[in-house]
Length: 515
Image (cartoon, rainbow, N blue to C red; front, top):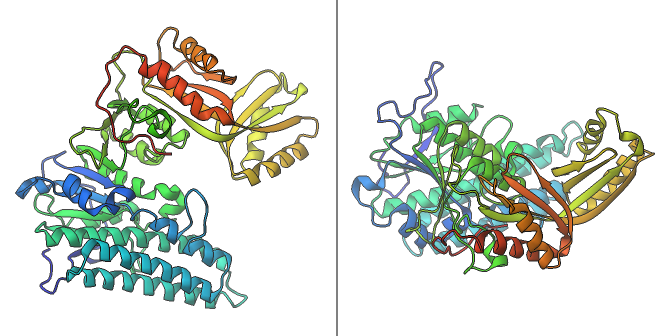
């Protein structure tokens, strides 16, 4: 598996090791169980090459200490935004411009912008070294291939018998894959220049014709690698039937990472990001006030995902939870900190709030129908209507004749939702109002007077409480407040439930929950 003498990078592609029909799922059958970790490097972290090399990939490791690790790499920060569309603002990237404008010149320019950015990153990573040419040749081959493919598709669909809409999901998958291919190839190439036996594992399905499952692709790619002597650097995107982006959105890298950990029986899954998993967002509360959570469970992780906190995709968490694999969050820029470990069965020794977070700009959709009382299935009929719109129910509350849904949705979606419900339920009164959700979350909130303390803290801060939701499982308490009071509510609850608690402060993190 050593690199070629001309500087070309050793590559493992599943197609060079076709799966046998009776292939057994046991990638590490010749090794001791649970001898390795599977680690994911986030986009912002991998963009800081020097820090990742020093703090994650190499650091003070030598010899065998460099190995028994599998790395799954995200695209460089902002690259997937350029390839698809901006995750938060929706600014069109290459995909959005291709699907929308559908002009030849627009597509060529969009792809050219991506190519220029990739080459700029290559120059930043490799400088004037010979490896820069290898990196540039790699992205040129990918970008020219993608551009040619899309132009051919565009031309084909100019005839009436072919519909471009039928191929857009595939186009999205192909474009997304190029970000992870770029960053993973660069990372493996750079490591090899430093004497590490790194292997670029390309699972994007580039130019292969077979259609195999994600598990088969992982199995065939890793079966040829000796983890004790080689360091696999794997693309965060993997081609599979139906498409990872289609199934998991922008969380596809995390699902790939989790599935690799499960299939290889990792002793621990680790996510390296540019922030700690902290008790609140330090941009709101202040860096001097937050602390690293340290230890929690997958139930808490689910609550964070529901509030769109960028910890881990719920499907990825589910994979790790079912396999009973611990998940560790580490701050790339503080390698000495052990970070936060998430396990299946952890419960804090003392009942306490572990994190204060929430969701801004949620729509409270209040559905009042006097005749609802005593009628079974009313909620189901409303949900059927909501399913036809691009909305997500974050939480809900109800009484005899009123159901309030708290919806995460774009502003331009809500008016059609209300109109559709009014047409389906002409006797109902339906109103929508923007609010914020603020939540105290912990593995054990079964603490006397915790709810009362939280209510007093919000009242003392002159914050009107529009609603309170608390389940008997004692994992979270949700407060509905005015949209403009989100930051104030987070600060008030963090001060009352975490800062003023009698528990000693942990090491101060450099950053916190990212929104």
